[in-house]
Length: 318
Image (cartoon, helix red, strand yellow):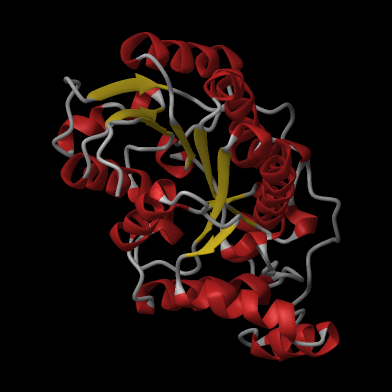
């Protein structure tokens, strides 16, 4: 492990994996850390024992806002001189079948999980190229290598992030900038409780007459059971992120949980038709999907709630 102090900017650092990474960096490394979260979430740092200091800068950053992205990068560079490592960790997850997704839901999902990280990368790259050094770590998901029903636009955002990151991996190699995707699978945490529902998915979840009700009825507890049974924790993944950022030649994709490694292996080596058949057979209660109790409601389309607006619930996003 390098003992030369680096400056590491972590988005979404006030909870979950971001917070675990912040604690590990401060405890186990000599590095300087720039920890960001939405302004409404900054108070969580003090509650977690993190305060602004010689090695720590706490900054407000909503990754969907261009002005805040620019301000955070400029403040980090003014404080510590350079950003050596960018960890794009902030994210949001919507639970909804595709038919229940409005344009507003889709754009919010993509702004947080894809557009924000890519724009932050574009801000830090010129200085990294000038120094011919740097590290970019994007936190993806097993959802970026396989899609799960009721998580359509979440997977879409992670697939997009994986595609852009793979291109970036080749593009910046002449300047010795290291690029990696961290791929967690199921993690023992309460993050599944913070998954957002769209207006359509919330209605369907509560209405047994809805055509998609059984999808949610079976998938939601299934995901919760897998999360609670998982052995990986935010801290164990944080440790692997630190190991990745210190490697001289880290791989493009780093599976950091057993299930992520397994799904990656199956996708590479199993015939695709068999792979999809196996996963479909594994879905909980799939024989009952589409069944309704009583008279079904009128079919969609489901109403679009209107223009994209900021998330009313900060804990759902960061």
